[in-house]
Length: 345
Image (cartoon, rainbow, N blue to C red; front, side):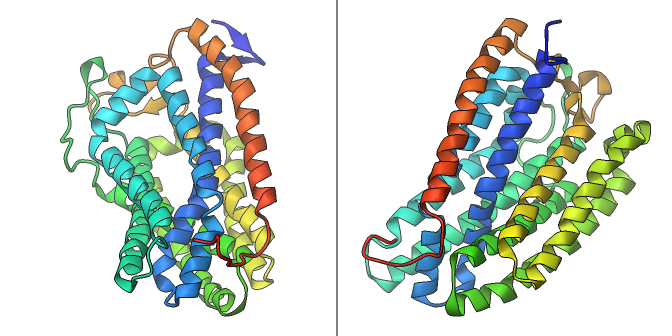
């Protein structure tokens, strides 16, 4: 098997896809979180500021989802097919909500009628909330495992099987984390009365996250033992959950000092460490079968040919830095507090 930098191609591609989805979660995570808070803002000006805080960047953030999804399809087509077959309904709902969210942002200020703006306000906030929740639901099912059978075919109930208790808990935890992340981002972009209101909302968001995260972690340790196997076998890996907990604990400390830029960095690090935990818990498995471990989908039985992986790694090595440069340019261009003008949403 060919290797590069000491990693075989399937392992290296696993890391590349993990990095792409981590970038997406950090960037679109604050978008979703900001949108989830949208209906908590009662005044027209506050809602416009909230929209304009994410308006210049939300579509660029979704580029990371497109690249990550394409990389998953190209690198692990077996996983892509089995996961979408099993999670067909949540993925379709995700697409519906992501369309409505985009339309809401663009349409909301096209007319001045109160009912029109309220309609799109609700659509924007509900869509953002459901997007954050559905990402967590899919992740929860991946961690817990799904009914994969012979030839990696899904043999469960495609309609409601994804709505199991663990997936719902992970969904709520993801929503809580995104809302915390989004409130911190909005605090960096706002001032005045809205800034004061957001400080109160952020406290609620942090409490929401700490409670849901604690419950989900306890449930994972008690009822999903296969996720702890790697840590029992290699004690050095405990440094990752330790870093995750320290990062989480540092957020309220920085918030109390009103150091929101640093708090945003640590909420981003929290997401990164938690996704690294997920990678460690799964590797080399990509999707556990609840029917028989023989049907587990791994990085080896799901991967494309080594030649294809090698070619695509070259493309990723060129394309990913370009997307990163574009992202940095956009955020540096639109840095600072939001100011409304005639071109604002």
